[in-house]
Image 1 (tube, rainbow, N blue to C red):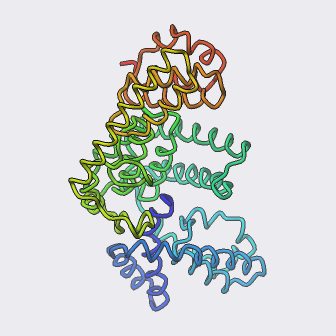
Image 2 (tube, rainbow, N blue to C red; image 1 turned 180 degrees about the vertical axis):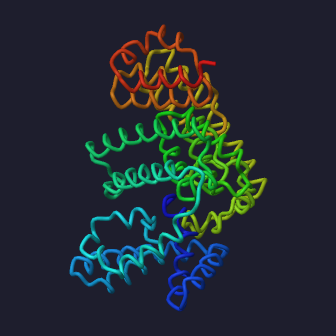
Image 3 (cartoon, one colour; image 1 turned 90 degrees about the vertical axis):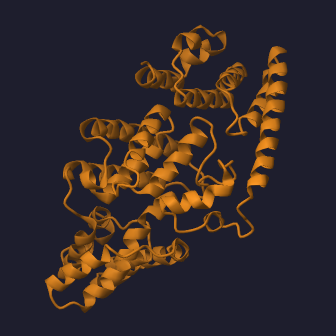
Length: 406
């Protein structure tokens, strides 16, 4: 969903551009029309989202036509796919796709690529970093394309995790060199690619936080996609420091001052309402009084579950205590740091691989909040076994030392 949303503006521009270019008789006319195209406002996301399946169908037909050496038909269907918002419009991705090798020598293909290039490439300060970011983005999307019906095979999951770690390392280096990759520095597509890498850095929450802060400094300056920022904000605060989201990106999680959510979304440039985004026709923005009532019940639930969890923890009933801690950790916006620590300790004491991973996720949450007491962890009996045996614990400790040591 988030990947597709970011392409909407460009694909709508392409929809206009191909029809205009076909009517032009000179290169100068094409160039003038292309300049005008970039000034067009994006159309309603809902219309574009509903055409995604058709776009994919056109793309598949384009591939088949290319394999049959039907150049004109292939290019026509490829244009239609891009117009309708199919999830691969970047110039480099189409140019280097092996699906169209049989027609790449033709003048029709080359003319089509020239039209794409004029839209997807631009003068930037750091073209080499733009190119690298786009290649990294293409790579992460290829691996995520292996996910079937939301399920990830173990071998694919391992590849995705390793790829994400390498990409984050490269993005760190790029940021060290040029700061946050903005439109001016690496182009709109390069900036989007940098954001995509950052949002997958769930294993390095301090880095994700740093990226969010860097993006925040460019808000309302036409240097970043502000909807990208909103996505990263909600992702970090719900998965990182366990606070409420602001823009309703993640379904069914608490929203800060939810009665103001549509105003915030509009300010950031969202073109669809929360009801349309969640595809819940029955959703209505709550009143301020309804929000207060919901928050009060959430806070009461948090206090109740923490009380039960602590009592069971004192009795060394770790499995039962973990159940109540899990319920408490769903009360975003009210979770205390010390309770995250105790929940992490409880999960570790369960001596179970699944619980151990949940404990690691909480250590990452603590790292998002600036936790840096490594000595406390190392001296805690509950963590000694995991710290010695589990590489993910060791990795998170290294992240904390790197980002939170000051």
